[in-house]
Image (tube, rainbow, N blue to C red; front, top):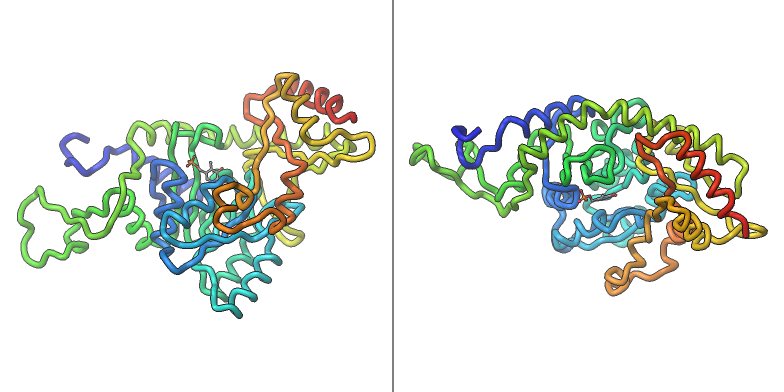
Length: 372
Ligand SMILES: *Cc1c(COP(=O)(O)O)cnc(C)c1O
């Protein structure tokens, strides 16, 4: 590792990249410092820049939209499907038709596999081919998930970004993997994550012999967005446990489905659409409170669970309603399905080491909390 040169990383990085690519059935995986940086360099590598626009889901973490702005591109949103809580394919198709008429088609569309449930990727791919945009999956929640029998990150998108933040499915402290089937795109991502510097003779402007073994060239403006060897070693060991993590999450999600049936709640969808199947990674288990007759409102239910020491959360405040995005011209009411979903949403505890007794306690407290 120390003798291989200053710019070369150690063996743990490539080992983790190779194992991650194999597990996700994809040719190339590029380790990056975190998914925010991964989305940034993926947007750059896929051509986002000034004068262009990137579309994503309003029901996501702000990083899914910010990445476009880092590149100098604009951002817009496509409303969600109220059942899957993912970007709606009919809404995407309608917005594309309008954008084509207006001459303002997006350069990249970023669907987000919310809570680990895959988006309906086949029709999205068909739209990408028809309208000529790139499909970039924000797969931050979807490590190990699959769509119609194909691992997320392998088949439909031009590139896919996975997060290894501690709250996600597997962790490296901070970290990310960007996957793609495209070798040239993978190479662009490698250059962008490390200062735009190359030591590969064929990539240099140099014509003539190498001046010496020290020589390198910066050929583009890159960043220091590398994943360290220590993080990669942790990621490799976490990856070996992915199947057991996923099985535990799936079993607990099935159990929630049974225990919560019949309550005034909307439970998570199981499939991306009527015609497609999927295996969720079950990053989150999100209920929607159906407030009304005899049922408390979301804020009350949340506060009661919080007071009972149950670690609940809300994912996500629609991005376009954030003050920063309002200042850019967005306003509440623009993406009503995402806003209606948000009004009732609560993420209840789901992690591999949650015991049945703890889960029973969550359900008992929830039943009490729901009473108006
Ligand atoms: C966590 C998350 C990110 C950002 O991931 P980091 O690795 O923390 O940068 C982006 N998008 C979504 C949907 C996320 O949940």
